[in-house]
Image 1: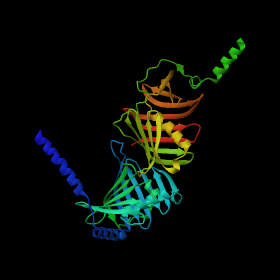
Image 2: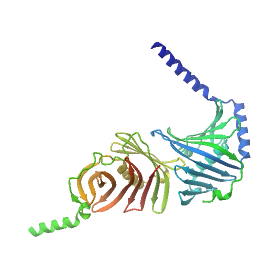
Image 3: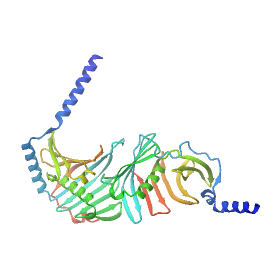
Image 4: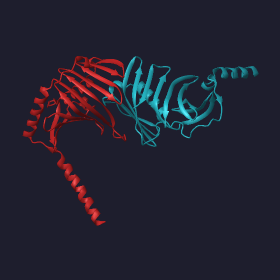
Length: 211
Length: 201
């Protein structure tokens, strides 16, 4: 019994130690280097096509709500979220317009009248590109673990904070590409976007963005 | 005096109630112990693709219903992209708006949604009477002091009608039901242009 207690105490201690070791805050110099590398990568991107998995975590649910699809981005300002599972739905943002295709039901929305929604979308687009480093808009902090960098953005604007209390963008260490974007709400709830099979700067037809 | 009584009776019969208007026959019908079992399993997350049509405006999204425990339910509506549009809690007989998008925060709309979702989650409303019509066993019950008629076909709850005086006010239609999970739900309002369509995902 005593041996078991010792083992469990050591295990707990190890987990705590590993927990602390997992994320380390970057030094000022490391942060600057990371920011520059990501910015260079971001500026190189004229188009993105990426599969995504979206996990909606609500604290009271037994399971996260999972959906998936394909994200298309084309410079300067066209982006399409095409959900394919478990429902067919697409949201295409072109400038200030949002075009929705909900399983064949089409509608559009002028976002210039809905500033909070527009700024939220701008942020998601910029985060997918890895271009969110505006210190006037966010309190930014930089971390790393064995394989990834993660950058935490806390919006300074109170209205935006009502929707998103924090963005956490995870970049791979080798190519500085975005692996995931986590948008935390004020409570313990969040939306996590995980990207895979990303293709950059491949031609994407304008027809993709036609509703 | 006798003529006055007869006139009063005639007046009562002609005004009537929703059951008499629709030809319900009072009957001791058999119905399950739980009137509405569809959102009663706390181990399940009830997640629906939702369309809310108000006048000519459509709002799409995801509706999540969860029984937290025997006294508490959560009803949350998010966009497909995950942004929360509203978050309601039902605790015992109380109701709380945890959060709501500013654009949707209209007292009348919140009140309607509160009443509609209460019908979905209420397992055992107060029973008043029971009837029969054709193949349907019908239970009259009260939710928020309003008459609701539960229509059972072979012990399966297929629709609920909220009535005001003699007239139908709101109709809840449940279809494609397997193991107490409803695939399709429609909530249709007669007096206002509001229609909610839910499809299980």
